[in-house]
Figure 1 (cartoon, rainbow, N blue to C red):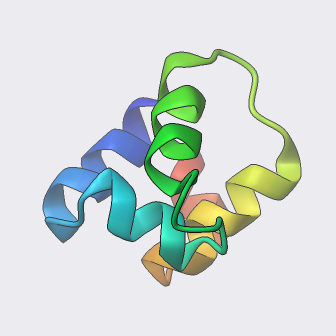
Figure 2 (cartoon, rainbow, N blue to C red):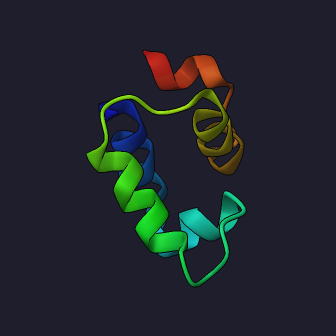
Length: 63
């Protein structure tokens, strides 16, 4: 998801910080974000977590 990558870059958050903000445990936060960015078909719940962590509506992640 290129839009998520752009939000991540502009936020200057690390994968670790973003993952923790999304509610993943510290032990798996970085890996969870990296796995999502490598994957091609994310679950709606995961997209909701990204939107909440970035403080944007879900619709912003699809533009």
